[in-house]
Image (cartoon, rainbow, N blue to C red; front, side, top):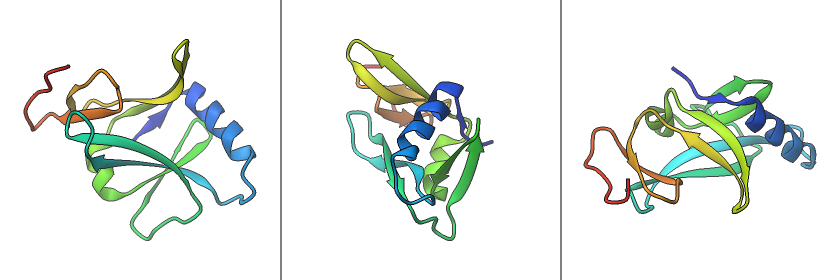
Length: 117
């Protein structure tokens, strides 16, 4: 099971990457400890693909994910959402047991719940 990008996310990623000078630049999606639920999502541009990184191609876009993060993101869908409060990449993660109101942090299914879920 892999990560997918919606057409909206792929389009926005293509726009952002067109502004980069290095054609090897890709979006890196990762999970790190922290946030109000225990883990948080991170996004950054990266020009280097590490040996064990997974290169995911979805809707014409390329994304890098490290193996540890992939364990928590398998089956997730990345979307790009624009609203009155701003625009951002959003992850719909089937591995999240709960997530808090910020939408950027989550508790995996195997851990306890979140007070703000």
